[in-house]
Length: 261
Ligand SMILES: [Ca+2]
Image (cartoon, rainbow, N blue to C red; front, side):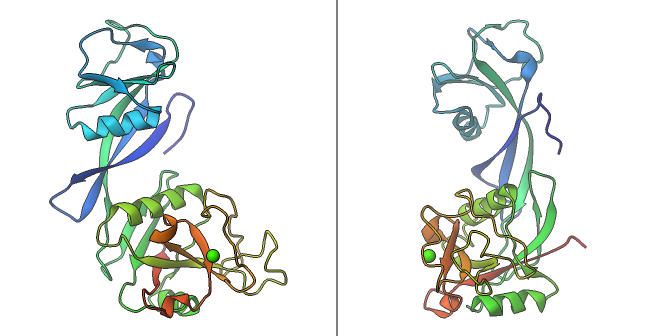
């Protein structure tokens, strides 16, 4: 998927059940910049406040008949439509207004516990396979071995797009929500565990240290919490924890990944 100034994408999860598979529908909204600063004066489905243009998209998602919307930034109003507009015929001028069209729907797989490999498609075009190993709670070193033993590796999260995908899955898929998972990342081999580049993947790639990835104020105990997990407790953002933590009562489980065959 290419990004260009005319086409701004964002992906929204919606909560409709899809009956054929254990999955969730994903809709994509595409901005039509040729209709920027226009709006429909009458004949819309609904007009209501929304905190942001993305929130307006969520509102549109919740209405099954909504296929496009205008968002007025100045007064934060969201105008929903059950049809799409190709040109400004029938529209009027409206300062600081954007127009988005629901263009496509597709599905993410919500993998069953210890199910098959599932395909992940990220908004940056990356595709990979992933699998949750939800039978045996393990330490992080054993999680690394569990994944290599089935021809993969422990999940690496190095981009914001991948962070979004993983958090969406773990938050929205009921069968895997509420559990804690190991990802690849440790500072056990660092000479200074407090250094900003201390956390590395098993193959020595730098773990991103921004708040996009880490829960606020974490890592908080890098001198002894050498490994990284993602848990419901921290909204599936990174937290530093002892590498043996997975053996405790609640358990921590591997998410493995591999290239698409
Ligand atoms: Ca911690």
